[in-house]
Length: 420
Image (tube, rainbow, N blue to C red; front, side, top):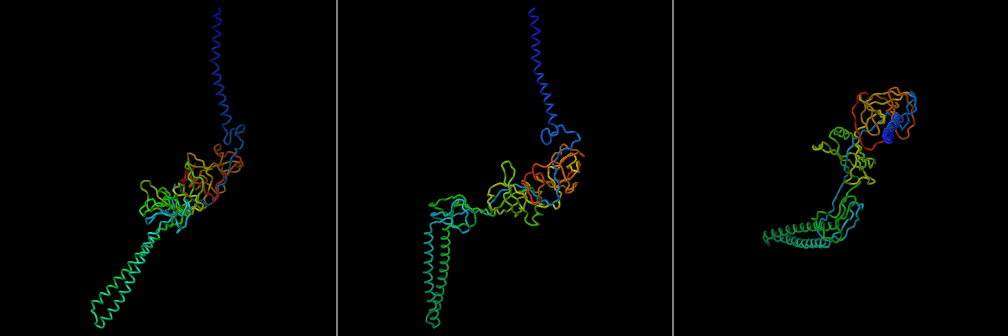
């Protein structure tokens, strides 16, 4: 009897143990369904749409479509290059007795950078000067002899041959004096090379030779490298498809170029300097299908540095009286782009076509007029003729002003889209 009464109790305990996981699973499913229902309408924050009647207006952010001139830019990746780069090398051999600059110093053209021992070259100059003086004395004597021989020949006291010899002697000494003058100029040039000066305005780099070393004209390293940073150049590339737009912009003048810093993640955020396009290369790189361009920047604050990578924005055109909207207002559908136009307390779904776009503004080429109010946030919950209420924006969501220029990123130019 004990065993018969004990067995049903054990079975009941086993069933109770197996029932708990199923019950817990059911509770989790119910909680998930409740959370989905609770958070499903939230477009601008969790639970923002709960307990709202179906006829209640939907809160949205709005911005007007502006009519203004909008600059058209092309983006490229460039490398900063010094406007001039000079490696200062010795022109003569000798001991380097002094270095008159500090590393990283701004120097002017003609500033003394270093001094080579000049004594050997000064002695060579003195010797050439003395040799010229000696030959000039001989030339004066030869000219006097020639004058005397001419008188003797006239009176038949000597032969014409002796007079001709005296004349030849004068010509020889005249040539010798001219040679001496050339030797003096050569010695003066070599002596001037012992004083090494800066050939350009610029900034010195790291010193390559210390005072006390023997330098030679054949040295390859030089003494220092000087780079001109004001102005400075940026060489960048664009796809060859941009060639017609760039060529057209060059015919109208020097297009404006903007240089932005290149962040580690590839984004460009800070405007470094504003310059102009100066050179369009005369051929397309057939291996990459790109064209090379050079822009010049004044670089007053030394924000551009040789060897650095920058993003370059090149203005190739300006869209006059364009209808410009914030990119957030443009929605994409299977039939093309569209916007929600606010008409009183309702919205109308309006198909548009877009042209040039960047991350701060989009040009609408058709389907929209300037001044119309557009939905820029909350469009995911809207349909045609939905009731809306415009709420004040918490941040700057408006389209940029005429002079606002955005950092280059995914800047693009779209063709006309199909009506949505």
